[in-house]
Image (cartoon, rainbow, N blue to C red):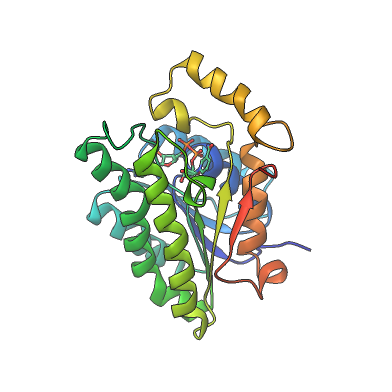
Length: 254
Ligand code: NDP
C-alpha cells in the first residue's frame, strides 16, 4: 500500500500542473504539505483541493514566493520547519521553459531559466539536507526528457534539465550513506501551462500536442496526474526504499 501518512513534504511549483497534481495526491495519502509558488490565488485553490476529502486534516502551509530570490527560497524551508518541526520529502518541481537556440537565446533568458530550473533546486536542496538527514527522508526532482535527449529550439531548457539529472545522481551518491534517497522523474510532453507560459501561441501549442501523438509511442501526451503518481512512488518509503540516484522516464515510451 502506497502511503505518505505522517510525512511532511515540501512541493515547489504547486500552484499549477504537475506540482498541483502531486500536492493533491500527497494529501490523499496523508502527507502534510508546504506548497510554494508565486501565484497566491492558485496556491489557495490547490490548498482547498488538498484539504477536501484528503487523508490528512492538517491544511497545507502556503509559502508564496519567487524561487529565484534567495530570501524567498530560504523562507520555504524555514517556514516548514517552524510550522511542522521536521521535513521528510522535498519535491523540486518548479520550472519554466524558454524558447531559443544557440543563435537567439538571450543571456537574460538563459539566466532566468538556470536560476529557476537548477539554481533554486540546488539552494533548496542544500537548505533541506540537514532536515532530511534527521528524518532519513528523500528528494524527488522534476527533470524532463529534454535532460536525456537533444531537442532543437529549447537549448537552455535542455541544458538545465541535463543539470537536474546529474545533480540528482551526484547528490544521491553523496547522501546515500545518510539514508537520504534522491531521484528524479523525466516526463515527456504533459498537458499543462508550461509551453504556453514559455511563449507558444495557442495554435502552435495545439500543433505541438498533435505532434506529441506521433513522438510518444503510446500515441498521446501525458497528464499531470500520471507524473504525480511516479513522484509519489519515488517519494514513498514502502514502494521505493531501495531506489536512489535514478531518473525515471514518464514519457509514454518514446
Ligand atoms: P506549470 O507551468 O503548470 O507549472 C510550473 C510551476 O513552477 C508553477 O507552479 C509555477 O508557479 C512554478 N514556478 C515557475 N517559476 C517559479 C519561480 N520563479 N518561483 C516559484 N515558482 C515558480 O508547468 P508544469 O507543471 O508542466 O511544470 C512542472 C515541472 O515539470 C517543470 O520543472 C517542468 O520543466 C517539468 N516538465 C514539464 C513537462 C510538460 O510537458 N509540461 C515535460 C517535462 C518536464 P507560479 O507561476 O505560481 O510561480
